[in-house]
Length: 339
Length: 173
Image (cartoon, chains in turn brown, orange):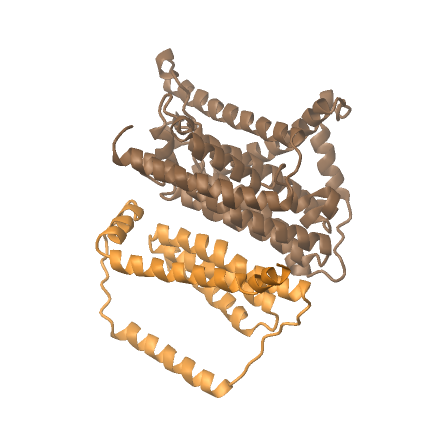
């Protein structure tokens, strides 16, 4: 029965994640169009709502081209690693509190891991493989450059990311994600307790997901398409999917760690039944994630791209010292029991 | 054979098979790549032993850090500078004698040691807290020594990387 419940949770989460990814692509195109004073895709279905479906059909129908000198095995494997890592991270994210349905007390989290935060960090550090290996195996200068840039970028920003998380871990006193969420009850959200850590973490998340203003691994004007220049058809689609899935996952992590996760303030004072409170909390989680995704999209279409040396300077000379200073300050405050 | 055994033998097989590829592959990229699966197999065995923190640290440090740098180095020298890199076998006889000695010693230790096995005890809920406390109390000396070794390695790497840049600056002046 436990396994069945887990399977149902996995299927639901995957379905919601993949569907939302498809519609985030549409949302991004419409928002981009609005920012650039265009109309955007609005022909397929009502307001373009069937556009993602048409895109997927197009990608599936396309020919799969592999460069002759490419390393076939790794070329095939790289997109699988990318999408696998992007989806696997979601396994530990608590998207709601417990809910009692059909006589079962169900925890709204696929895997309740003791070391949830470390698991997330470990998987983000694996994300670099998909990009690097795709860049290398394509045997193309543009791909290789994109792959190299991305490895350096992801490794650099991982440090700031990990260090900003330690502040949160110190406050919650646990590596479990649900304990961290429970510690942020009502308005005690970590964004208020850890504002600097929040900023460094969000900036690092942008760098880790390769989104603008940190999208140097796929900078179109310089690198054609970056690490996925030599990919076509469904394999390109997997990279595309992984990019957006990473964005959703990053938003979900930011929500869980800094924005109180599924906590909705004052929901208990409304006097609703337990099931409706749980549902409201899940919806609250989705709302916060959606707002962050909107933030990601607006940033992408309003800011220019950094130069590569600027990117590295920000990572090593601004973000890392800030994160360390935040860590020391947090330690001091906890030691002196000011909070 | 219960589920635990099946999972154990699966991870053991993954570890050994990929370690075989690491050693016997002619292409150094494949060797480096197969090491990924070796590390994963070992991490899986750690999870089976309820050592969750060590398992994730294994992935975080070895797979996410060290192996990326190794792949990075191999790929850059291979593709960018166009160095043909092949692995080969040298000094077969001394190597096999040494390997046989080490393997024999390990097997000997494995059979002779009085393993402290506790059955029927449930695993602790979290290992992280007790590990952290031990690092700061009982094992603080080895912990500090290890960090000094790492610091020295870091400084050494920085020195090597900076070495040939200094004369150039002097010449420009």
